[in-house]
Length: 299
Ligand SMILES: C[S@@+](CC[C@H](N)C(=O)[O-])C[C@H]1O[C@@H](n2cnc3c(N)ncnc32)[C@H](O)[C@@H]1O
Image 1 (cartoon, rainbow, N blue to C red):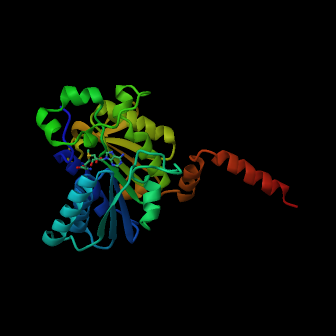
Image 2: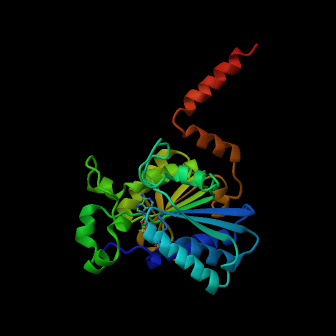
Image 3: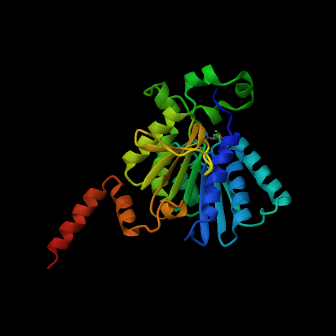
């Protein structure tokens, strides 16, 4: 059965991630969290709560992004309510902006909401973010009719569950539509950890494969509903560790310092990481050859 957004296991992945970060060495003084498709804003609010419950030596800067005015209205309301009622709400900051994360960030002119890059610029926000989280619409059109209950269909806007239709894509590709863009954004904002929520193991493996192809991550694993350390050891699926118990729920990727933060390494080669990131941009090979040529032509 496909789940409604904001489910308990989203909370479990976020809580697990933040608990790892509570013990992390070398966190920056300002830790930046980008939550794409934020909906009610529950992910940044939970992240902040969990982080400050365990450490107070970092300033959290969290940004929730959504295309829907209704969702953003609700997220603002939740943020204000948390500000009044919860212990850690006065620490760090949670901001919200409207943007379309699916459209080409380099598009010149757009009729609807701005692409993410332009929205960040427009709002004077940073271009680099340490951690990217997203629980995007990931249900394919056929799964929507087969597996969601009538109450979910009646209550949740379809925009929150099913990616928009595109004539050149099959049902599976439609369900997966956000992930290539989210992985590109993770690269563009130079995220050190990306946690992407998915529907099931089959989708997790497709997303993990996409992330691997991008060639910028040091490690990729799949977390189940209960990814906690006390649950069973990881099993291997197509070369990806699958951790915890229950159904597969998120794909977690890390690079550079992210490996330290998640306890996956004791030291990282930051130069190698920066070079890999540079090379992942289309045209970077051309730029490299060009700069080598210029160097060789110097008198
Ligand atoms: C599954 S809900 C996520 C809710 C929230 N992250 C959570 O865990 O409860 C997906 C969200 O994606 C938003 N969304 C859909 N298309 C989008 C787009 N192109 N750009 C940004 N947000 C989008 C929807 O408005 C909805 O709030």
